[in-house]
Each structure stands twice: as structure tokens, then as C-alpha cells.
Image 1 (tube, each protein chain N blue to C red):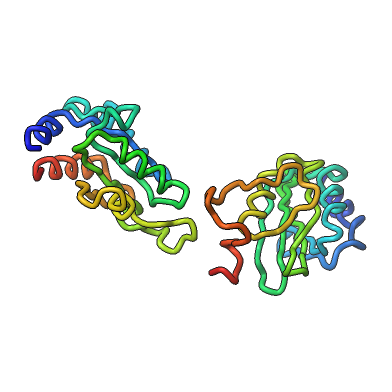
Image 2 (cartoon, each protein chain N blue to C red; image 1 turned 90 degrees about the vertical axis):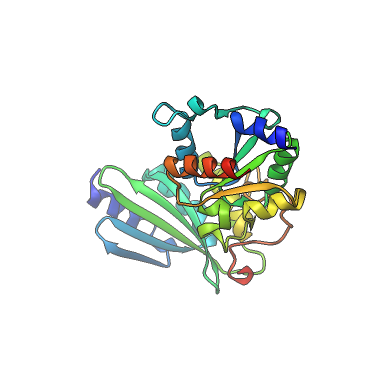
Length: 143
Length: 145
């Protein structure tokens, strides 16, 4: 397992999943990938399929419609993988706590599929790109 | 057409209204029963004519309300037609989509979350609720919260 993790840490490829965000966190993630912050210089690359990804960037509270789809995306991601939960809503439902369509924070839905999933949290509404970079660095350095 | 001419046009339908509320010079509420709403909407949209903005639904505990919001862009006047649906068991109202296709989706949304039936709607499929949401459960009714 350890060599797999160290291989993953060198250049994590990320897949972005929006499970019902207001788009604000997504804007910050796009900000990360575009020239101002440009995380690709650290080897962090956005990919178009979960099968290519080492990490999932999940934004937004999980709605009833999105929950089975998020679980399917997690199942299809190559293991080992890290789930980065970005934003207050994804971490703990945020302002949507009492919404009729809300089934839970991201970690609860992921743990239904895999109780041992590696999950890292970046709270904030929305988290700054610096905070997301800091969260990713901290999470990878503890692996 | 200026504001006074709009006021005169709106007076033509006063016999079908319960009341007219006018909190501001450029804000008009027309209150009516659901039976008259189709005719009144047709008048507002085709004869005045006003621009349809959006419709909203409210669960007002003793009745359901459907509010059709129109804008009169020359003067910036907003006209809202409030239609009251008194039947709480099977709330139903005539759809305005046959002459106003832009209202199709908002009527489907109101049907989803408040359970108001829109008669003669061309396509009354589910719009915003999850695919596995149970039939007959309407999340924004007062009784379900």
C-alpha cells in the first residue's frame, strides 16, 4: 500500500464532482486550476474521468438525486484515492441542513460505500484557493 | 401607452376580481378566484399586453395561491395576479401554458412541490424532485414541514 500512496502523492490527478453546490466552491476550484494559482505546476491535474483520478474534489451538499451518483463515482475511482470535501455544505450540510432534498454531508455518503475511505475536509464558504492548496498539502503530508 | 392608460385597461377586468391592492404607484395586486385566472391571464398577456415574468405558488393554510407576475416595461410597473384555490384536497387551476409556453416549467415545478394540478398542461412530468421521490408527497406544503 505504501508505495501506492507515495506514487499517488507525487502528482495527484483530481476529478471534480459537484453534488449540488451553489457554484461558489466550483469557481474557487476553477480559480485553482487557471493561471493565477496554477496547481498543475505541482502536478495536480484535472481529469475528465474518475477512472483516471487519484483524488475526488467534492463540492456541495449531497442531494437525494446526487447521492447514488456520488457513490458510483467513488466506486469507479481507482483505489487508493483521497476524497477532498470542499466547502461548508459538503463538510456538514451548511445552510441546507433542513432542506427536504438533503440526505447528508459528503463523508456520510462516501462511508456508506467504503467505511475506510480517506477523507480530507476544507471548510469555508467558499474556501479560498490558498485554503484548498493548504488543505491538499496537509492531507497529502499526513498520508 | 403610459401608466394611466394601463390603469384604464386594468379597470376593464374589475368585475372578475375580488379586490385590487395598490401599495405603490408601480405595484399592483389583482386578487381573483382560480376559476377566472385563465381568462384574466389571457387578458393581461395578450390584450394589455404585459410581459410574463414568473409565477409563484404559496401554501396559505386555508387555500393555495398561485401568483402570476407581469411587468409593464414602459413604466416599470409590476402587476401580480393572485389566484386563490379554495379546494385544499385536490387543488387545481387552469394551465396558462397553451397560450404562454414560457410558463410550462414553472407550472411543473409548482405541481412537484405544492401538488397543484394544472389542467390542460401539455407536459405534466416531474421537473425538480429526485427520480425516487415518493408520489403524493409535496415538500413545500405546510403539512409536510
